[in-house]
Image (cartoon, rainbow, N blue to C red; front, side, top):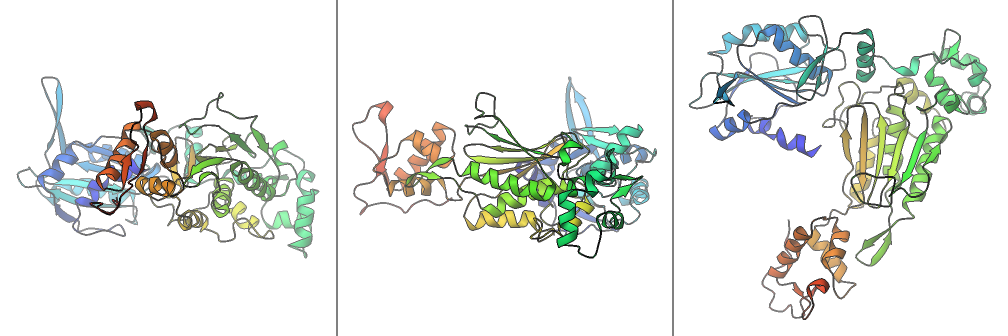
Length: 497
């Protein structure tokens, strides 16, 4: 996530004022410095960015705009030429003569977005450079956006891929949340749901004035005489029998802090957690918490039991179960490593939700699941729409690093790391409050720093501040550091970063 934010910080550097909403014409003209211009000319064309010459036909430009809107949004710069010199391609600022010269391009944007709220434009100019560059910033949209040729496109890397076949369009509707798999009928007898213990208890204790079949019909959970996916997930005693490979949670324990778990680092067999959604969420949180509490991690006082805020685990698992794409035949995966927990939920972020706005925006791919499970006693989604915010806040209270969210081609992964917000310097000094010395290996385990040389730099900064010194008379293999024995003449306090 961070590399996206850093890369597109250039967009914010180019603006004299921040924007909180998309604006309509007239468009602002922003002057950028030569340094900012050069940074723009060297941007990589990728999933979130595209650069085009001003000669691009407006209709062809709409393919990129459509692709951004149907994926994760992005920034398009029109007025950047590309020339070849001795086989080497070079970009040049070669913009429009004046705003009127962009009218045809603006007209197609207006036709694509009649409400004007899914995009905004501005003109960029730079001293010594020719013409105006049109900057179009496109939001991820709730609906499917077609290009001028009537075909929707999807952004994949630096490509705009047409979505032509019926299967491809259905996949796009599911990804966007325009269509939800929760309303698809499941080929099982009605009594698979209507006679379940879960539904019987629900209508007795929660909806006492209703009967099982009457309630299912009233909530549109029956279609063509069959229970829909939402009904099976919510009220079947064993949804996994009817929806295999898409309704369970797989729990893994890897005895490593490496980026990827391997078969060699897998401790024991993966666990499969099943049941109706209400019980599935609770069992998944309980078993994950129990697994995490069995991990020992080096802390200032030695080996300590790892414990994440239960609210964080609960909200992230709940979010994964309720908002996943059930059309994808894959179970939710919870992977517990020595230094983190990963929760992977099948399906990309729905609607207009992106990694950058997910804490502020709401969009329920599975509206019936979210609404009905909230009627259960002590529902897992008590504060609808506030789940991830609660998870982040719980980590903050314990001064742990906030969860990191990553979107892959077909899933969303939340990384919950057991890393304190304290600087590496502070972690070293806290450790030395309870231990006479510290080695590079122990310090790396303590701070999460992987590079031996990077850890040395931390020690050197503490040495230069006068609070640390090397333990004398040690061989290279036994080198260690300790608190400086005489701190009266320390030259500086502990450095802050």
